[in-house]
Length: 534
Image (tube, rainbow, N blue to C red; front, side, top):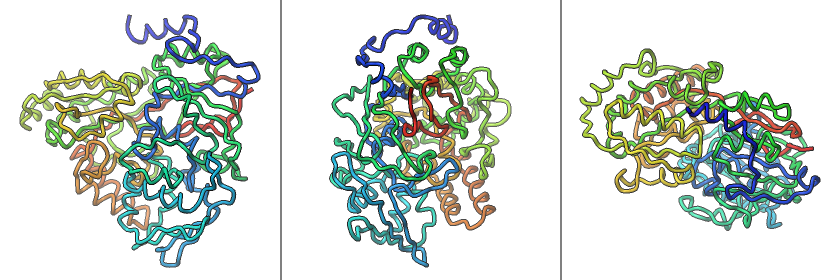
């Protein structure tokens, strides 16, 4: 029986209780159950530091616990969140920020400007926009308990967006003592000021995490949308139940054992739609970009010819069909690193991904590039359907191309740890891994770490492509839409020619929830505030 047939058969079976396979099964009364939202996340919460890494699953949990100075709304425009007001000097060099009154951390200590300063200082080295700000920063100081001042050496008009963007790593605000942790070392204390507090003693990586409503949280008075406005916790408790097996998650949702499933696989959506107690919808209208990320430091992918040979052979349709099936409305080819349908979208330089795939030409280029049969260590997370499916396609592709495939089946948490290692592949390092980028993060070059190409400071894979960096800087300096488009087109050409990474296509994902749950928004992450359950 093939994978699709197995899944369809499996979902017809009775669901196992949450206590099965090591998952805790809390004894909840009917009233308590209505106050508890049970959620199946995209992957295991293996670590919990939103600055140390860039995994979306960590960002999603972190948004419940830590708050932001600004938050983007559904138009991707930054709105004040923890900030009450700001002032910018006439020359654009000095920004003065005033915090809202009454902000408190989960340990009941007030949020002070010194906490904000320390949090920004920890965030800057790990974030693309933060790195730019660090390079032009003159002074960042707390003026008093609720006021901090940021003086720059040159204007940075996109500062509010940098502090409120949804792309990882987000500038979450932590207590000063926590924020003083080296940004390349994981934190061990999880105290925030967001609408939910993390229940540390219930965290079982691989199985479960829990979040309790923080009664000291004071929502803004305006309407809530995405990360902006009022974040009202409408349930007492949110439980994350990790279910790597899609059939198990589907059955649990249909039987009412869980309330919300972040990313049901497409094969199971027809079954879920037939259940009158379940709602199914596209999770994010801006979709996702699949990513084949290569290590530019070590053979074989330190050779641009080898990288281009893979791009020549790569069939985005193969990847997308494996991900979403036969529904053509759920995917499209993508010769770009930018989000289709948005103002800056371009296919400049993307010819290598268009037209008929030519395996023979790709093999010839691979040989001409001097490939020496080095093992290609593919780190493929099996507990994340998006990465597992792409990894299966890649293993077949590289073997047909004539490459020596070292397929390492692992989990998403381990992938997050291992991809940060710069060791050679045979010494604990890696050659490639799969991920995906939210369309909301790829509408422009500002906040997506995967778009940087400045060597050691770049995202995992550490590409050095001066042309990409030059055009990115030109986009930041642009004063008109035409100038922005020209810079982005040149940036995309450089990214395609040098293979910054290989896009595997553009796709939409589903989310599913019980009909007694209301307030769920479409967006780049699950928003747990303003969600209620009856």
